[in-house]
Every structure is written in structure tokens, then in C-alpha cells.
Image 1 (spheres, rainbow, N blue to C red):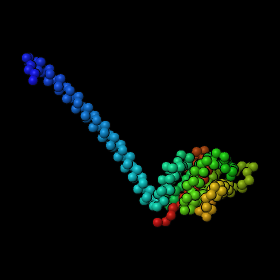
Image 2 (image 1 turned 180 degrees about the vertical axis):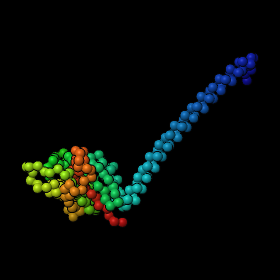
Image 3 (image 1 turned 90 degrees about the horizontal axis):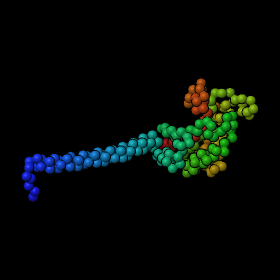
Image 4 (image 1 turned 45 degrees about the horizontal axis):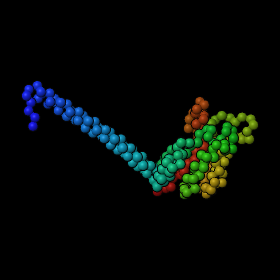
Length: 208
């Protein structure tokens, strides 16, 4: 055991010990805060995932797995807007992903996108409805369509034919054209008109 000859020497030694204890305590506090942050982060992600899945189950019942497959495995949300409602999952391809203006011929670059959907649709028992939509701009000369209604119908039927050729059962498919009569944006801006020119592919919910 060490004896201190002077009082100030003892005080200095005690101060050094106190500083070490403070530093050690601070380190432990920082570590505790760090692990608490990690726990909160992973807990919040888990809770969010559970809440999201619960929401899907409540709104889409037994077809929740369809949405999960579309989002995760095939990455459909990277190329189209995917929306889930009480009676369907809607996959919205806006202009000009699939078609050039005034045409019902699929662009070569669209095949890859539609192939992703084909991989999903082949195994689904659900009805699949394809909707064609346009803006309200009158068709110019040189087009073979007399109206936007005819153009939207032809585009929807083109997509339907693509799925049939790729092996999707025809009895599950239907196609309809709405022309400019179901806009999702105003037609008074270029951005709005671009949003309205679209193909919507709807996976219809099974009743539970």
C-alpha cells in the first residue's frame, strides 16, 4: 500500500483517478446511447414493415402476396406507378413509356417492362383489366384513328395481345379504352396531359 508524504500529492493522485472514472463513465454513456439509437432504428423499420403489411392485408385480403411480389421480386414500382385500393392493384404506365404519340404500336423498349408483368400474371388467378387513356388533344392528320377513344382502345388491345402471346391465359384478360374521359390531372398543362396519356393495368381483387 502506498503512503503519500504530502497532502497535495494525495490530492493529485485522487484527481487523476477521478478523471479516469469520468472518462470511463462518458464512454459507457456514449456506447449506451449508440446501442439505443440502433435499437430504435431497427425497431422502427420492423414496426413500419408490420404496419405496411397489416394495411395490405386489411385492404387486399388474400391477394396481399401479389402486391409483395410486384414490389420486391420484379421491381415494378421502378418503371410504373403502383397503387393499391380496396378492389384492385393498379399499375400505371404514363406517356411515353409504351407508345409513341398517336400510335398503337409498342415501342421496342417497352417489351422488357411488359415481360416483368408477364412473369407475374402467368401464375395469377385474378382477372386483369387493361385500360387505355389519352389527353383531350385532338388527333392530327395522318393518324388512322378517328378519335382519342379509338386510339386508347387500340392501345389497350395491343397490350392485351402482347400478354396473350407471352402465355397469359386469355380468359383472365380484358381491354377497354376511355379516351380523354377519365383524366387524373388537368389537361391545361403539358405535365397534366402527359399524366393523362397512360395505360393502366389492373389486377382485380378476389372477393373474400
